[in-house]
Figure 1 (cartoon, rainbow, N blue to C red):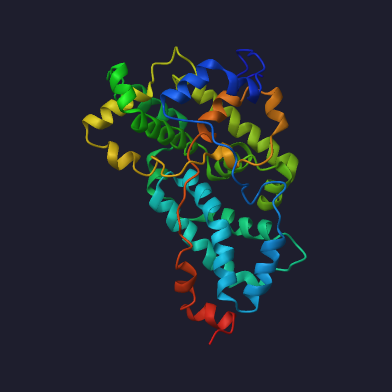
Figure 2 (figure 1 turned 120 degrees about the vertical axis):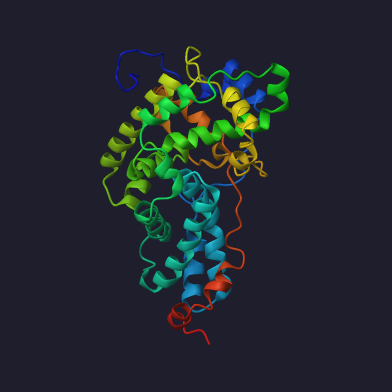
Amino acid sequence: MMIASGRNKRRITTRANIVSNPRTQQLNLALGYRTVVKLFMHPLADDYDEGKDRALVSEACAGSTQAMEALARAHQRFIYNIALRMVRDAHDAADLTQEIPLKMLTNLSKFENKSSFRTWLYRIAVNHFISATRRKPETEVYSFGELGEFIDKVHAEEEMSPEEQLARRAEIRAIRDLCMTGTLLCLDRQQRIIFILGSIFNVSSTIAADILEISPANFRKQLSRAKADLFQFMEDKCGLMNPNNSCRCYKKTKGFIREGKVDALTRQFIPEVTETIDSVAGRKNEELDVLMEGKYLSLFRSQPYHEEDIAENLVKKLLVDEDVRKLFQLS
């Protein structure tokens, strides 16, 4: 594959090669990663069964508060994980996610069971994420150029012994994930959501294009551009991608520890769950078998698939909303 500028022709590498690569295994082991067996699929997977959603929609439209809460709970975790990669900050992601059930409930009467509920719901979510007010992290990173300057200058001279790296592996892993999510902020929102859906969560171009109301060909074209820009930046700056690059996760971590920023920066990224994105990514993207993408995507897909129980009591709070009560004729 030719990466962005096309200057360096690289060996074709499959996902299987990446997983079995000793250097990658050593890196993941050193940072505390482990392989997780896939436990469930996300709602945009090819083989997701929408039958339960359709039944819950019918019950919710009939006024069932239990069905409303079940619908919100079925999708809130996946929506939250998309939002977290859109804005990087856990609190902002939670705020964005909490607005989706309200939009879902107030528009549920407009949904027709003839179409796909998940397409309808995630179109609402994606449109909201794209049009929402810019969050603070989005105002801190404007371009790959600015981020590159930050990486080159900040904490570039710090050092950490192998023993300290082992002791601090959770923090180093969290800083790595934070940095990877920061790179996404260099993409515009349209590119960002396309990359999150198509590359990180492996949503098919047919499903993702339907959500974004563009053609599958257009989706693939925009995804290709986003990947080219992002992967070229990683190749030019990330020490994990190219050992000749000066940036090292442990150097940044050491500097942030010295400044007393590590707890605030990493708290949201040190997971309390065992699932990774890769464990719920759904279908295997056959295109990855002929593209040199595995080593880049592994840094995104090995991140935690976060648990955030936003749905708990949320529907109960929504049900005191006068417009919602009138809409569902709740007494």
